[in-house]
Amino acid sequence: MDKELLKTLSNLFDDKLTPIQNDIKDLKSNQTRIEKKLDNVVEQTSDLTEFRNTALSRFDDITDALNNVELITASNWKDITKLKSVK
Image 1 (tube, rainbow, N blue to C red):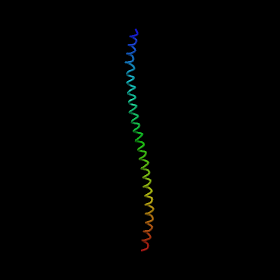
Image 2: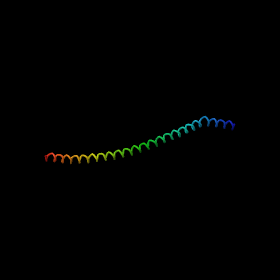
Image 3: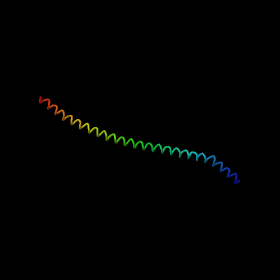
Image 4: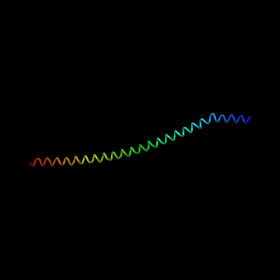
């Protein structure tokens, strides 16, 4: 009787628990893949944020340079107007 009970329990284990163990292994594998993908997304987001900040800084530099050019040009127009009026 004990042997039959052990055999029945063993069959129950093989029939019910083994597929569950396999499913758990698959879930762990999928979780690892998702974590790797998430790490890549975080890294790319960091790179894009750094690029954005660099681009904005350079844009500010260009804007400042353009403002200086406008001031110099305005000053030159005044000088050109004065020179034309001297003739």
